[in-house]
Length: 296
Image 1 (cartoon, rainbow, N blue to C red):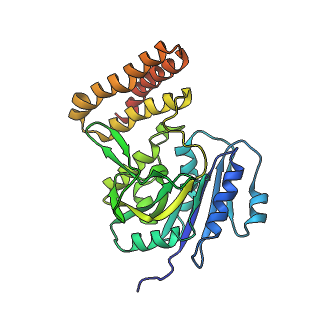
Image 2 (image 1 turned 120 degrees about the vertical axis):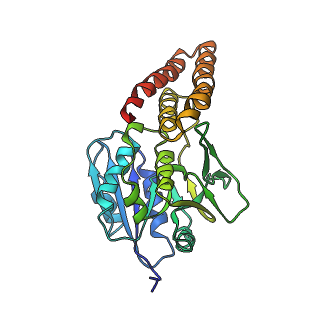
Image 3 (image 1 turned 90 degrees about the vertical axis):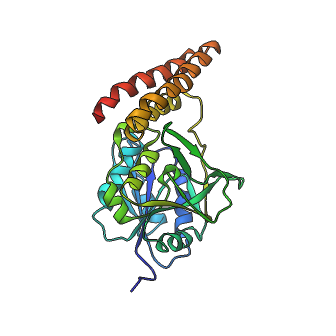
Protein backbone atom coordinates (compact mmCIF):
# COMPACT_ATOMS: atom_id res chain seq x y z
CA UNK A 1 0.00 0.00 0.00
CA UNK A 2 1.37 3.42 -1.00
CA UNK A 3 1.64 5.95 1.80
CA UNK A 4 -0.49 8.91 0.76
CA UNK A 5 1.61 11.31 2.84
CA UNK A 6 5.21 10.07 2.83
CA UNK A 7 7.68 11.42 5.35
CA UNK A 8 9.55 14.46 4.04
CA UNK A 9 12.46 16.40 5.51
CA UNK A 10 13.43 19.84 4.24
CA UNK A 11 17.21 20.27 4.53
CA UNK A 12 18.41 23.85 4.21
CA UNK A 13 22.09 24.72 3.89
CA UNK A 14 22.73 28.10 5.50
CA UNK A 15 25.69 30.37 4.81
CA UNK A 16 26.35 33.28 7.15
CA UNK A 17 25.44 36.78 6.10
CA UNK A 18 22.21 35.65 4.46
CA UNK A 19 19.87 35.64 7.45
CA UNK A 20 17.18 37.70 5.69
CA UNK A 21 17.18 35.26 2.79
CA UNK A 22 17.03 32.33 5.20
CA UNK A 23 13.93 33.71 6.91
CA UNK A 24 12.18 34.03 3.56
CA UNK A 25 13.21 30.50 2.64
CA UNK A 26 11.87 29.08 5.89
CA UNK A 27 8.62 31.04 5.68
CA UNK A 28 8.01 29.54 2.23
CA UNK A 29 8.73 26.04 3.55
CA UNK A 30 6.29 26.38 6.43
CA UNK A 31 3.67 27.65 3.96
CA UNK A 32 3.71 24.42 1.92
CA UNK A 33 0.36 22.79 1.25
CA UNK A 34 1.30 19.49 2.85
CA UNK A 35 0.01 18.03 6.13
CA UNK A 36 3.30 17.29 7.90
CA UNK A 37 7.03 17.54 7.36
CA UNK A 38 10.23 18.26 9.27
CA UNK A 39 12.70 21.08 8.70
CA UNK A 40 16.46 20.97 9.25
CA UNK A 41 18.80 23.95 8.98
CA UNK A 42 22.52 23.25 8.92
CA UNK A 43 24.97 26.11 9.29
CA UNK A 44 28.68 25.81 8.59
CA UNK A 45 30.28 29.09 9.60
CA UNK A 46 32.04 30.97 12.38
CA UNK A 47 29.19 33.49 12.78
CA UNK A 48 26.93 33.81 15.79
CA UNK A 49 24.58 30.93 16.57
CA UNK A 50 21.12 31.43 15.03
CA UNK A 51 19.53 28.39 16.62
CA UNK A 52 17.47 30.00 19.36
CA UNK A 53 16.15 32.76 17.12
CA UNK A 54 15.12 30.30 14.41
CA UNK A 55 13.47 27.90 16.84
CA UNK A 56 11.45 30.74 18.37
CA UNK A 57 10.14 31.76 14.95
CA UNK A 58 9.69 28.24 13.61
CA UNK A 59 8.77 25.76 16.39
CA UNK A 60 9.98 22.24 15.77
CA UNK A 61 12.83 23.32 13.52
CA UNK A 62 16.03 21.27 13.85
CA UNK A 63 19.19 23.39 13.88
CA UNK A 64 22.74 22.09 13.49
CA UNK A 65 25.86 24.22 13.70
CA UNK A 66 29.41 23.49 12.57
CA UNK A 67 31.85 26.21 13.59
CA UNK A 68 33.82 26.22 10.38
CA UNK A 69 33.25 26.74 6.68
CA UNK A 70 35.28 25.19 3.89
CA UNK A 71 32.81 25.26 1.01
CA UNK A 72 29.48 24.16 -0.38
CA UNK A 73 30.30 20.46 -0.69
CA UNK A 74 31.49 20.24 2.93
CA UNK A 75 28.43 22.20 4.12
CA UNK A 76 26.09 19.78 2.36
CA UNK A 77 28.04 16.79 3.68
CA UNK A 78 27.54 18.17 7.19
CA UNK A 79 23.78 17.86 6.63
CA UNK A 80 24.05 14.45 4.98
CA UNK A 81 25.84 12.99 8.00
CA UNK A 82 22.71 13.74 10.00
CA UNK A 83 20.17 12.89 7.27
CA UNK A 84 21.30 9.56 5.84
CA UNK A 85 20.52 7.37 8.90
CA UNK A 86 17.03 8.92 9.32
CA UNK A 87 13.69 7.33 8.50
CA UNK A 88 12.45 9.64 5.73
CA UNK A 89 11.36 8.70 2.23
CA UNK A 90 12.23 12.02 0.65
CA UNK A 91 14.61 14.89 1.37
CA UNK A 92 14.00 18.34 -0.09
CA UNK A 93 17.48 19.84 -0.46
CA UNK A 94 17.83 23.58 -0.94
CA UNK A 95 20.06 26.53 -0.14
CA UNK A 96 19.06 29.47 2.02
CA UNK A 97 18.20 31.77 -0.88
CA UNK A 98 15.29 29.81 -2.36
CA UNK A 99 11.64 30.76 -1.90
CA UNK A 100 9.21 27.93 -2.71
CA UNK A 101 5.80 28.20 -4.28
CA UNK A 102 3.30 26.82 -1.75
CA UNK A 103 2.46 23.85 -4.01
CA UNK A 104 6.08 23.06 -4.87
CA UNK A 105 6.42 20.05 -2.55
CA UNK A 106 3.06 18.50 -3.51
CA UNK A 107 3.78 18.76 -7.23
CA UNK A 108 7.29 17.35 -6.88
CA UNK A 109 5.94 14.46 -4.81
CA UNK A 110 3.43 13.69 -7.57
CA UNK A 111 6.24 13.69 -10.14
CA UNK A 112 8.76 11.57 -8.22
CA UNK A 113 6.21 9.00 -7.02
CA UNK A 114 4.91 8.47 -10.53
CA UNK A 115 8.19 6.84 -11.57
CA UNK A 116 10.34 4.76 -9.16
CA UNK A 117 13.43 5.40 -11.31
CA UNK A 118 13.43 9.13 -10.49
CA UNK A 119 16.04 9.93 -7.87
CA UNK A 120 15.64 13.71 -7.94
CA UNK A 121 12.62 15.78 -8.98
CA UNK A 122 13.51 19.43 -9.46
CA UNK A 123 11.42 22.60 -9.77
CA UNK A 124 11.76 25.43 -12.24
CA UNK A 125 13.98 28.10 -10.70
CA UNK A 126 12.75 31.62 -11.45
CA UNK A 127 14.20 35.07 -10.96
CA UNK A 128 12.20 37.37 -8.71
CA UNK A 129 10.74 39.10 -11.78
CA UNK A 130 9.23 35.77 -12.84
CA UNK A 131 11.65 35.07 -15.69
CA UNK A 132 13.30 31.67 -15.94
CA UNK A 133 16.71 31.28 -14.31
CA UNK A 134 17.10 27.51 -14.61
CA UNK A 135 15.05 24.59 -15.80
CA UNK A 136 17.89 22.18 -15.15
CA UNK A 137 20.77 21.41 -17.38
CA UNK A 138 22.48 19.09 -19.80
CA UNK A 139 26.11 18.02 -19.50
CA UNK A 140 27.79 17.73 -22.90
CA UNK A 141 29.94 14.87 -21.76
CA UNK A 142 32.46 14.79 -24.58
CA UNK A 143 33.29 18.46 -24.02
CA UNK A 144 32.72 18.52 -20.27
CA UNK A 145 30.41 21.47 -20.79
CA UNK A 146 27.27 22.11 -18.69
CA UNK A 147 24.43 23.84 -20.53
CA UNK A 148 21.84 25.60 -18.41
CA UNK A 149 18.31 25.43 -19.78
CA UNK A 150 16.01 28.36 -19.14
CA UNK A 151 12.82 27.57 -20.99
CA UNK A 152 11.20 24.23 -21.79
CA UNK A 153 7.72 23.55 -23.12
CA UNK A 154 7.37 20.05 -21.75
CA UNK A 155 5.66 19.56 -18.40
CA UNK A 156 8.37 17.13 -17.37
CA UNK A 157 11.71 16.31 -18.89
CA UNK A 158 14.82 14.34 -18.02
CA UNK A 159 18.02 16.25 -17.42
CA UNK A 160 21.62 15.68 -16.41
CA UNK A 161 21.70 17.98 -13.42
CA UNK A 162 19.51 20.12 -11.20
CA UNK A 163 21.04 23.51 -10.48
CA UNK A 164 22.31 23.61 -6.90
CA UNK A 165 20.97 20.06 -6.44
CA UNK A 166 17.77 21.87 -5.47
CA UNK A 167 14.81 19.53 -5.39
CA UNK A 168 13.14 16.52 -3.87
CA UNK A 169 15.49 13.53 -3.56
CA UNK A 170 14.76 9.95 -2.62
CA UNK A 171 16.63 9.00 0.52
CA UNK A 172 17.68 5.81 -1.32
CA UNK A 173 19.36 7.93 -3.98
CA UNK A 174 21.23 9.98 -1.38
CA UNK A 175 22.35 6.81 0.37
CA UNK A 176 23.54 5.33 -2.93
CA UNK A 177 25.57 8.38 -3.97
CA UNK A 178 26.91 9.38 -0.56
CA UNK A 179 28.95 12.50 0.04
CA UNK A 180 29.60 15.52 -2.15
CA UNK A 181 33.15 15.78 -3.48
CA UNK A 182 34.98 18.25 -1.22
CA UNK A 183 37.86 18.62 -3.70
CA UNK A 184 35.42 20.90 -5.52
CA UNK A 185 35.20 23.24 -2.53
CA UNK A 186 34.69 26.02 -1.91
CA UNK A 187 32.36 26.47 -4.88
CA UNK A 188 31.49 25.35 -8.38
CA UNK A 189 30.44 22.14 -10.16
CA UNK A 190 29.79 20.24 -6.92
CA UNK A 191 26.07 20.09 -7.84
CA UNK A 192 26.78 18.91 -11.40
CA UNK A 193 29.20 16.24 -10.18
CA UNK A 194 26.70 14.99 -7.60
CA UNK A 195 23.90 14.73 -10.14
CA UNK A 196 26.10 12.91 -12.65
CA UNK A 197 27.06 10.41 -9.96
CA UNK A 198 23.39 9.98 -9.06
CA UNK A 199 22.65 9.07 -12.68
CA UNK A 200 25.59 6.65 -12.69
CA UNK A 201 23.81 4.82 -9.85
CA UNK A 202 20.83 4.24 -12.14
CA UNK A 203 18.54 7.06 -11.01
CA UNK A 204 17.06 9.67 -13.31
CA UNK A 205 16.67 13.40 -12.71
CA UNK A 206 13.40 14.95 -13.72
CA UNK A 207 12.26 18.54 -14.07
CA UNK A 208 8.66 19.26 -13.15
CA UNK A 209 7.90 22.53 -14.91
CA UNK A 210 4.75 23.20 -12.89
CA UNK A 211 6.80 23.26 -9.67
CA UNK A 212 8.30 26.70 -9.07
CA UNK A 213 10.71 28.40 -6.75
CA UNK A 214 12.40 31.80 -6.71
CA UNK A 215 16.13 32.45 -6.45
CA UNK A 216 16.16 35.48 -4.15
CA UNK A 217 19.85 36.34 -4.07
CA UNK A 218 22.33 37.34 -6.74
CA UNK A 219 23.20 34.44 -9.07
CA UNK A 220 26.99 34.48 -9.20
CA UNK A 221 28.20 31.56 -11.33
CA UNK A 222 29.02 33.63 -14.41
CA UNK A 223 30.29 36.76 -12.67
CA UNK A 224 33.83 37.82 -13.50
CA UNK A 225 35.37 38.01 -10.05
CA UNK A 226 38.61 36.48 -8.83
CA UNK A 227 36.66 34.05 -6.63
CA UNK A 228 34.30 32.90 -9.38
CA UNK A 229 36.92 32.69 -12.14
CA UNK A 230 39.39 30.74 -10.02
CA UNK A 231 36.86 28.19 -8.79
CA UNK A 232 34.99 27.64 -12.05
CA UNK A 233 38.26 27.26 -13.99
CA UNK A 234 39.62 24.74 -11.48
CA UNK A 235 36.44 22.77 -10.97
CA UNK A 236 35.41 22.64 -14.63
CA UNK A 237 38.65 20.74 -15.23
CA UNK A 238 38.16 18.43 -12.24
CA UNK A 239 34.56 17.61 -13.10
CA UNK A 240 35.54 16.77 -16.68
CA UNK A 241 38.46 14.65 -15.47
CA UNK A 242 35.97 12.56 -13.50
CA UNK A 243 33.20 12.29 -16.08
CA UNK A 244 34.59 12.68 -19.61
CA UNK A 245 35.88 9.40 -21.14
CA UNK A 246 39.72 9.48 -21.22
CA UNK A 247 40.11 9.57 -25.01
CA UNK A 248 37.66 12.44 -25.40
CA UNK A 249 39.14 14.23 -22.39
CA UNK A 250 42.51 14.36 -24.17
CA UNK A 251 41.29 14.77 -27.76
CA UNK A 252 38.34 17.13 -27.29
CA UNK A 253 37.85 18.55 -23.82
CA UNK A 254 41.37 19.58 -22.92
CA UNK A 255 42.22 21.48 -26.15
CA UNK A 256 38.84 23.28 -26.01
CA UNK A 257 39.20 24.05 -22.29
CA UNK A 258 42.79 25.27 -22.63
CA UNK A 259 41.96 27.63 -25.50
CA UNK A 260 38.47 28.80 -24.55
CA UNK A 261 38.48 28.71 -20.76
CA UNK A 262 42.13 29.46 -19.96
CA UNK A 263 44.02 31.18 -22.78
CA UNK A 264 41.21 33.35 -24.13
CA UNK A 265 40.02 34.85 -20.80
CA UNK A 266 43.59 35.25 -19.53
CA UNK A 267 44.58 37.28 -22.60
CA UNK A 268 41.30 39.20 -22.58
CA UNK A 269 41.73 40.29 -18.96
CA UNK A 270 45.38 41.22 -19.53
CA UNK A 271 44.39 43.46 -22.44
CA UNK A 272 41.73 45.04 -20.24
CA UNK A 273 44.33 45.74 -17.57
CA UNK A 274 42.69 43.33 -15.11
CA UNK A 275 45.78 41.40 -14.15
CA UNK A 276 44.14 40.02 -11.01
CA UNK A 277 41.42 38.30 -13.05
CA UNK A 278 43.93 36.86 -15.52
CA UNK A 279 45.96 35.54 -12.60
CA UNK A 280 42.84 33.96 -11.06
CA UNK A 281 42.15 32.01 -14.27
CA UNK A 282 45.73 30.78 -14.59
CA UNK A 283 45.91 29.82 -10.93
CA UNK A 284 42.61 27.93 -11.24
CA UNK A 285 44.02 26.00 -14.20
CA UNK A 286 47.29 25.13 -12.42
CA UNK A 287 45.56 24.10 -9.18
CA UNK A 288 43.04 22.06 -11.16
CA UNK A 289 45.83 20.12 -12.86
CA UNK A 290 47.48 19.47 -9.51
CA UNK A 291 44.21 18.30 -7.95
CA UNK A 292 43.57 15.70 -10.67
CA UNK A 293 46.18 13.57 -8.91
CA UNK A 294 43.59 12.99 -6.16
CA UNK A 295 41.52 10.95 -8.63
CA UNK A 296 44.38 8.76 -9.85
